[in-house]
Length: 257
Length: 314
Image (cartoon, rainbow over all chains, first blue to last red; front, top):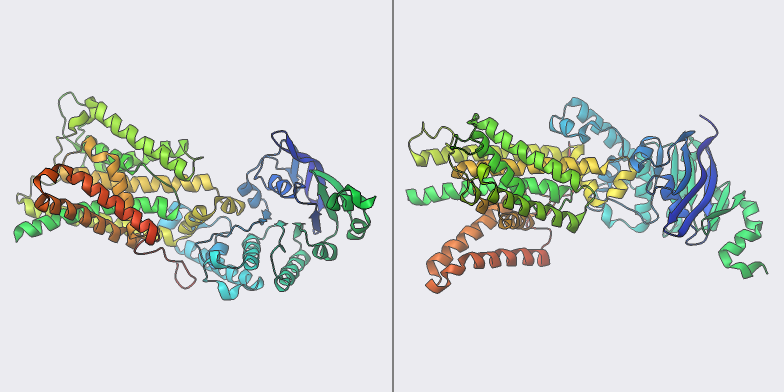
C-alpha cells in the first residue's frame, strides 16, 4: 500500500451548466487527518458525494488505494474500505440505536434469505459477535446508555455520534466526515475529537469537512480549501490562517483591499 | 346451530386466506416500505395459475394439467413470484407513490388480461373445472370444510413463523434499514435494489399462495375476484392492524373482514329495499372511512411495530 490513501485527478461534477466541482486534483495522505474547508456552496459535499459514488463525476478520476474506482456504487466503495457520514445525519429512525450499528458489518450470513430462513449455528454465532462489537463501539462513542432507544429520538449531537459508530463497525481504512461538529455541543465535540484522534493513531485516514475553524486548526493537517468548485488552497493550518486568497473566499473580495 | 358453526368455518377460512396475503403485504410495505398498489394482481396470478395447473382439462381451453395439488399450489405461488420479478425489475427505480401507481397499473392490466384471454382464463366467465383435493373421498361437505380450514390455518401459521424468523434475523434488520433510509444503507455497503427486489418477490409469492388457496376453496376464479377492491381491502387490514407488526396484520384482517361481512349482512337484513342495490357501495364507504380515521387518529395501527431491542432478537 502506498502513501496515498485516496486521490482524485481533475475531478469535475457539473449540474447542467453549473460546475459544482471543477478539476479538483487531491491526494489524501494515509494516516492523515485532512481538513476540507470553504464557504457555503463551495462544492465540498458534492465533492464528497463524487468520492463515495453517490454522484457520478462528469469527468476526472477517483483512485482508492491506487485502484481506479470512478463510477463505482457507494456500497462497493464501502466494501473497499471507504466510509462516510452525512452533513444532515441519516439515522434509521424507527430502529433502535443498537440495530443501527449492527446493520453495518459486511458479509452477514443472516442478511440473505437462505441464511435467515435456516439460521444455523454459524448465523447465530456471527450475530452474537456483531452484537458484542456494536456494544463496544457504542460504548466508545459514549452512547451505551441509549442502545435500546429509538434512533429517531436522539439529539442532533447524539445522531452524529451514532453515524460515527455505524461507520466504525466496518473498520474502514478511510473515513469521510461531513461537518461532524455542526450542531454538536462543545462537550460532545470534544468526545468526537478524542475518538477521531484515537482512531487516527490506530491508522485510520480522515477527510473532514468542517466550518469550526478551531476544530480544523487544532486537529487537521493538511488543510484544503474549495471555493466555487475549485481547489484554492492546500497547506498547513498556519499557512491557511495567513493566506489572503482564503480570506477573500470566505469574506468576499473586499476583505483584503 | 350447525348453520352458525358452518358459517363461522366459512368466515374463518376466508379471513385466514386473506391474512396470508396481508402478511405478504406487511413484508413489502410494513418492513421494506414498498408501496405495492397491485396486490390483486399477485393474488390473482397465484389463483389462476393454481387452477390452470391443478384443474381438469376443459375442452379447447389451455390449461387443466391435473398436476398433484400441492405442486399446483406451489406452482401458483411461483407464478406470482415470476410476475413480481418482472414487475420488480421494471419498477426498481420507482419509490413511494410512483411505485404505487405503477403497481396499481399492473393490477388493472392483469384484470384486463384475464378478462380477455378467454382461451386460457375463461374470460369474464372465469375458470371452473377444478376438483378440490380429496373432495371425492370426504362425502360430508361440512367435514370437508373443517379439514380445509385446518389446512389453511396450518399454511397461515407456517407463513407467520417463517416471516417472524426472517424479521428477527439480520435480513429483517436490512429490510427495515432500506425502509428507513436507502441512501444511508447503501453508504454502509448494502445493495438496496437487490434487497427491494427480494422483499417484493417473497411478499408476492406469499400473496400468490393466498390466491391459490382462495381459488381452491371456491374451486373457481373469475376477474371479479381480482378487482382493485381486493387490494384496498388488504391494505385496510394492514393499516388497521398495524404495519410492521405481523400480529397486528392478523388481527386487522379478522377485524376488517368481520366489519365487511357484518355490514353486508346488516344492510341486506335491515336496510330498506330501495337501498339494497347500494349495499356494496355503502360497504366501500365504510371501509374507506375506517382507513381515513385510522390514518388520522392512529396511523401506527392497533398493534404498532415494536422496536427490536438488545435483549430480544436472536
